[in-house]
Length: 213
Image: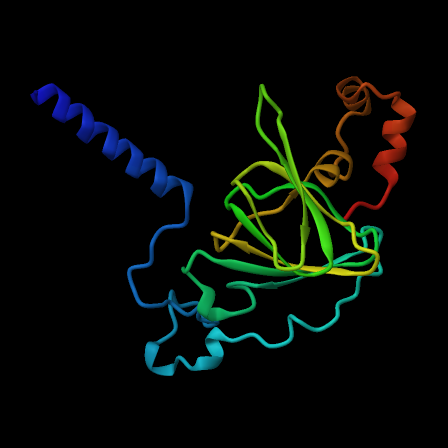
């Protein structure tokens, strides 16, 4: 009986440790507004409503880039009140045929909400299954991408599409696979990449000269 109790306590402790390592730490204060002077937190007496406010992310964005996409972030870097709350919000606007290439957020899960238009969102599970989950999302739809998995979003509407992306981390991170592989500085060995992707070395060198976003 005692051994069973010890086992359950051990499993509960292990589970709590895993959860604590998987997400941003819980704040110990009501808020900790980022202080531009270098202090850990802004003096609460000087905090105003503007420290928790950001205007303008809804405005039309510039999508005139190769990917046809623009992202406006609301997070600790743009809204001091986000500091320590473990949240980041992005407004993503896609031109026709615009897309976010396969990428990873190493420190956060993502909730995608379609504000306008329609997008395809999909993610791929880890080895050995590599199962691909994909869905066409229309205005008002929500889709969740689990933490750390490769995923993409692309516009499938006739015109522009707009989504919001919410992350459960102050610093979700963004690892674009094409960027990491072909735009690395100094460049990754071309022979190695050619063997890895089963491409000829000339193709790899050409990919390494392109402008990646």
